[in-house]
Length: 143
Image (cartoon, rainbow, N blue to C red; front, side):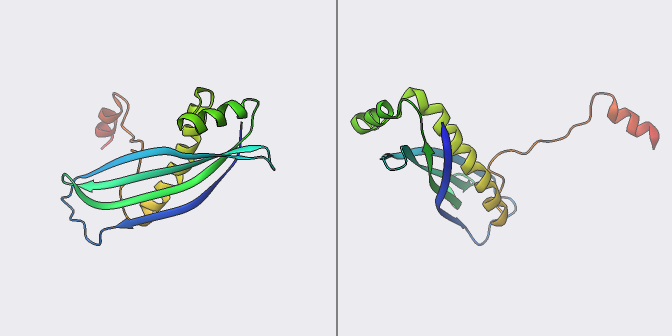
């Protein structure tokens, strides 16, 4: 069970000028970089790194956001999880989805705010409203 998290480092940059015609691509990646045992608090600390790279018209680097932090986890199978990490540098299947999803959720929320401040596109597509079938015709009749 995840009991807490902390963002420990944020790095972000944007090129000074991006032309209006630039087609921007975004590549996101989340990685667990380390797992530590904290016997004092009886937790595992999963250290993560999130990267969002913004490229324009092919491969031009126009911006990047990197967020690092850790997730504090406790549970019955901590010894098994830690042993697998120490031996194979892989997450145990029992926590993979939970840890990666939490890391991604934490990072995406922060990255969206940072992207807005840097005037870069949103990390995730925002919902679009489209009229229901027939609604558009009714609007035209009213005019």
